[in-house]
Every structure is written in C-alpha cells, then in structure tokens.
Length: 454
Image (cartoon, helix red, strand yellow):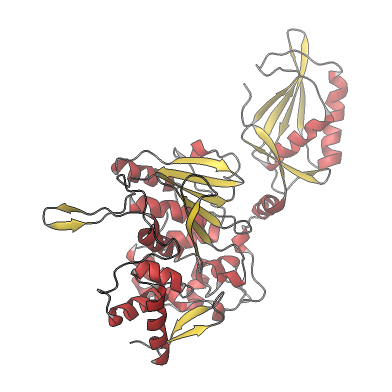
C-alpha cells in the first residue's frame, strides 16, 4: 500500500522527477512504476529503456543517484526507484520539492529558507545579527530567565548573578566574534521589534464572526516574558476566574487550566516562524483558538502530536532557552501535558490542526454561562472601582508591571490594575517627577525605564 515513503505509478512521466526530488529532500522513499494504487502489478512497456533513462535523468537534473531496478511478476515488468534522503537541498529545474505525508509540496518563501537552513544544520534563530550588541539586551529579562531556570532546577544556583555575556555563551547565543544571534534578540532584547516586525501576540474578542470584533490587544516585547504578559491580559479582560470556596479558603481558578494554557502559549511562541505573521488568539463566547505561523516538521501530522514523538523544534536555540527556564519539555511531551491538564479539569481535549500555513489549537471555555468578560458600556476600557486603589499601591503596581514588561502600554496597565487610563497617567506623571521613572523613545516603539527604587 502507498504510504509516506512509498508511491505507486501506472506508467512513467518525466514529471515524476519532482517526486524523486521530494523524497530526496524528505526521508527518502521508493517509487514503483507499473503498479496501481491498490498495489497490483499491471506492468509497463519499454522497461529496459526506462531502466537506462530514469537514472540518467535523475543524475542530469538533480545530481543524485537513484537505485533503479527491474522486477518481474506474472510475466509483467515493473520498476522500483529507491531514493535516499539527501544531506543537502536538492532542486529540480530550479525548484525545491519535499514529500510531506502523502503529498508533494513545492517549497518557497520562508518554508524554503527554513528548509535550506535545516539542511545546513542550522535554524533561523541561529543566524547572527550584524548590528545588535549586548547593550541592546534587557538585563531584567536575563534575570527573569535565570530566576525561572534556577527555580526549575535546570540552572545551577551559582549562576544566579552570571553576566549577560556568560548567559549568552552558555546558551550558544553569541558567536566567537561577539555577534548576537536572532534568538538572543527575540528572547532578551529591550525592543525586539527594532529587529523583527512580527514579534507580537494579538488577542481579539469576537462574538458572531470575525467581523464582529469587540476588543483587541497587542502584546509586544521579548518572548521570554511574553507568556506572563499574555496571561495577565487574559485574566484581566478576556477569561473569567469564577470564585468558589474550599472550606474557609477562597479560590479563583482561571476558567481553563492555567498550566495547560501556558503550555499552549509556550509552544506557540517557541515554535513560531518569526519571518511570518504575528501569533493570533481569538476568544469566542464558548471557545478559544490560538494560531501561530509555521507548519509541523516534515513527516509530522497533528495526530503525531497526540502520541509519543521526538522533539524537533523549529527554533532550536529558543526551545533550548525555554527548556532551561523550565517552560517546556525537551522530549516532545508538551501536548501530552496539555491534554492531561484539560482532562483533569473535566474539559474536552483541545484540537490541533494545520491551517493557513501554521498550527491552530482550539479549546473549549468553561465560563459557566457567563461568556462576556468585558464591559458592555466601554469596549476600549475595562472600568473597575477605583476607590479601593490608593495612589501608593497603584504606583507600586505600575512599577511591578514595567519591571516585568518595559514595553507595556498604559492601556494594558489600566486593564490589569483595574483603573481608568487617566489614573494611570496621573501616577506615571508623579513617578517621573520624583525621578523614579522615565520614558525612552517614542510612545509607540519606545519603552519604560525604572531609574531608582521607590
């Protein structure tokens, strides 16, 4: 029977050289000429001529050697063409093809770039940047990484005060001549968008259809802290946290299992194709879907993720940093942990599908009949009672948010703290007058900097 590595053809056409190219660029395979789709030998004419022509065309067009053999069954001739996987990219008439599942795909754009880099033993996040320096990195992001890695027992406590240079060297994120790799900038830069336009996480709240957008947020900044920032905004504006009591203890768990949600977010961020579109999260009344650009590894399908599988990260340096920080596993267990979390919460299992050149994960909400989590009266603000917020507490909370995300907007601060933006602006003005806080760069694209402790 036909499979990922086996293809049956009734007769030979030169167009099948594309399939040979595709097998060479994937895991290798065998093409049988003279066999129907059910595996029955139907025979071919001029078998001996094809036995000579096919190997010559493979060498002339692609520069590789195929194992071509003549077979006989019930007085019928058929041919097998065995193709070994190539260590270098193979093209046919200037185009690159790759076998994926049972289909042949032409590679172009970012998919071709990723493929060529992989064949060279590299990934896109491994490419050095010619202009960035260590001064462009945020030391607080480095500290956040170290603190999480130590807490997860994946970084030794003795490294808690390691220099930025040492951290980069340990992670392999800096070249011998001092050039920062793309991964270093994505993970730790003060302003990653200065180098990459699509380092964003978009969240939208929808009702009836995609045209019925109620509210939206764009989360920016380094990716090592991005999941925390996304979860903060989700808790404040998009998902519910129903209150219940266990004995005398008040509990406010998120409507979906938070650890499983974080695992989904970590996967989307770590495995995203950063030459493509931003990550997009759509929150509907009864379910949520998260999409990130970048297909599955060659030969993988969504079903592969539902069972034991090897870990084949798109961005190896980013995945390594996320592992060291304790965010993800290195054994391909991410989706297994996600399913375990949803099962324990009594929710249906999330669905995974390839869509629009990327991966979409969808899961059901458990909002207990109260799907609306934003104000009906103002879709651009999230008003809350302000009488309980003292100026001192508000200022401290603002500084805590800025420490975690220097690119945070006043709109995001208002949503997370639960006060209006005018109150946020008043507090920021006082902090700046006191010499505690300053703004670096423009309102859009700049960042906050804490000058001294309060």
